Amino acid sequence: MENEINTLTLQNKKFAVLGDVALDLAYYSSIGSECSVETGLAVRQVSKHAYDAGGAGNLAVDIASLGAQCDLYGICGDDCWADMLNKKLDAFQVGRDGLVREPGFTTFVYHKVYDENFNELPRFDLGYTNAYRKKTLDAVLEKLAEKLSSYDGLLINQQLSRTIHTQYFQRKLAQLLQSVKIPVWIDARQPLQYPNCSYKMNYAEAISCTGTTILSDCLKTLHAQLLPTSLDAEHTPVIIVTLGQEGAIGFDGRKTVRALGINSIQKTDPVGAGDAFLAAIACTQACGFSLKEMLEFANCSAALSTRTLLATGHPHIGEVLDLAKSPDYRYNPTLATDIRLSTYLPGTEIEIINKHARRLKYPKVAIFDHDGTISTMRQGWETVMHTLMVEAITGKALANLDTVKLKIVHDTVDQMIEKTTGIQTIMQMAQLVELIKEFGYVSAGNIKTPLAYKEEYSRRLAELLQVKYARFGEGIYDVADLTMKGALPFLTRLRKHNVQIFLASGSDYKDVRFETETFGYSHLFNGGIFGSVGDVSNDPKKLVMTNIVKEIHASSDNVVVFGDGPVEIREGKKHGFLTIGIVSDEQQRFGLNLNKRERLVLAGADILIPDYSWARKLAQYLGWET
Image (tube, helix red, strand yellow):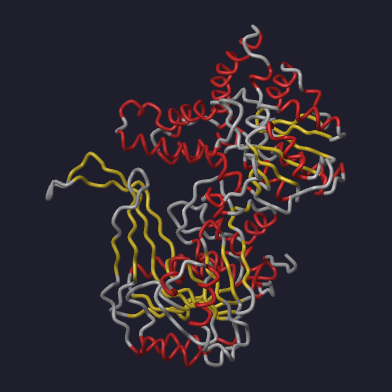
């Protein structure tokens, strides 16, 4: 990003948020043994509860959490709920002189109840009998008008069906905004149109407004519909449509800018992500960022917000800046989920994703993942890990869990393994510990360390490996039976063309070293063999690629990465290397395994091959050979 943003720059920026103010109150409950004496109904026991600012209040808190100053304008009741809301606002130093407490008005409250499996039960809402008095609406707008020129941006929120944006309020606010000199953003669930404003909405809202699912047409239609009254704006109004985990797109009337979504290996919760996104948009715009930079930064803020489960996240500026340094983007999301759009090299099973990825000669450096890319020894590891994780999560409750609850555990484990394939095992086990805590079947005192679970996984996997090693020793299997078809001949060919080859694996270094030496192909990796040493902060794949850039000084055009997992493909993409995904069927050692295709496309693979039977065709296509 060309411009800079940090705590110091944002401390001098000040924003106003105007809109529907609410309180979010969450209860985490389970069915207890007690029944109501009066009704005979089972009592839900609440293990903990939490509250946060909702609606426009949440947006104001997000701005303050990023480090800027923020004032909130709206209406709440003169009740205990408003006291709770004000306590939360005060904790983030949100100014509330513009938050009018109205006697006889009930503060809007969302009572959110979660069951023992963290499913949300029917919500209980307060405030839907409220009526807005013109006198109170005028008071809010008068307070805003007094300070409007002192702000670096105004954000207008509309969330409630019983909204502050009455016809009277809209007319008065529109008059105020006729001569506004600061950027104004609108985030509304119902159609709102004010002069000199930019708009942020999600994809579903954009479709509802325009009736088209084609993004380019959608943006142009929205721009024509919503911005004709913005001719006198000091700042060029724009339309931004958020696309969930697939990022966001913006249109300023001339050009369309797309920012990729950010992948997360953690469990996510989208509640509140839109507010975190808009807060970051406003802050970066005030710091002079381009539209593309605004979108990229806001995507990071939204991605961090989703990592807070069953609540709204409030990212800090430091967290956003750390993620912005090296985000894991999600590439080609439409192609990833629709194989009908795939393009194959004629007569082959080589899928071309990036037609501009061709090179004219053999690379200087090649980096290979091991398991599933070269070796098939650990084929079946997912089943071993899945079984271990289900047992660890359920503990002694496993035998007595009903089928519905057990299926939730199985599905959660499947999703976690799918998201984390390719990262170090110790990091997967760290996430297992979080799942154990989340489900609550195992008491805190009986939860083991990530290292302990990793050792148990390694022990179980070793039993699987010992059978294969034994059969290799007996001559039942040979090396070709335990590696991907054509892998070793391809490595040999690369060596003959003076390619420096690195092996970077997420498995333990000692295990990778033992395997490659036992099967007699360790010498092919003249760049070195790298594996996990149990340090979650030093991923071997990231380290290898970073060191190649620093020490070997190979240009990005001279490095290629081969792998069947998203980690190595994603890291290669960040460095500008040619990335070749191996869509490998590890059980039969050749042919396509389409279960791997989506994650490799999303990770940024330029080309996909099922195995190395196609090595010569690949080399010819790339321009390595004629």
